[in-house]
Image (cartoon, rainbow, N blue to C red; front, top):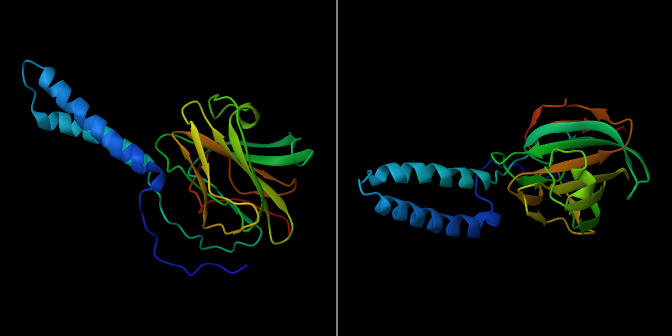
Length: 230
């Protein structure tokens, strides 16, 4: 499968945040003005501007959408689908699609991480399914099956099926999935986006070489989390 022409890495804001950033700015400015007006002893307005500016900065930071390009060999490579921290590396029974044991690697995203998601492997999207569910804390083991989630099955050029699961958390209430059934996908492309704290699980065949450790930080589309067997 051909690779993209490499370009300089760029930083931009994700389109998923357009409405949130616009209306959020209006709300923050309104609250700042109301609070400033409510105090009998006037506090310099620049203090309110700094405080609420920092709050807005956190929201802007959340919607960062860096354009990244993987510089390594994509063959048999599994990259991190998200920025965050590895919270699970274990063998699990996957009875919904594979009906056998799989190696699951889970990455938890805090509010301060980039929340764009990338395809973990090159291949072709076999199917995309969304399932409603609960909103447990995303790092809990039961979140993988019980929380609202979106499943993307990818078949690699060598015919290996890889499941990537976007999971909503206690705060996250919206999962956006760009993957479309039947489309070819590349590691450098965005798979989707999850708003306000969440988790992404990758299900791999047993025997896959794990390249990360529990607790390790990951960078989406950059950190190699595993290598598939040839």
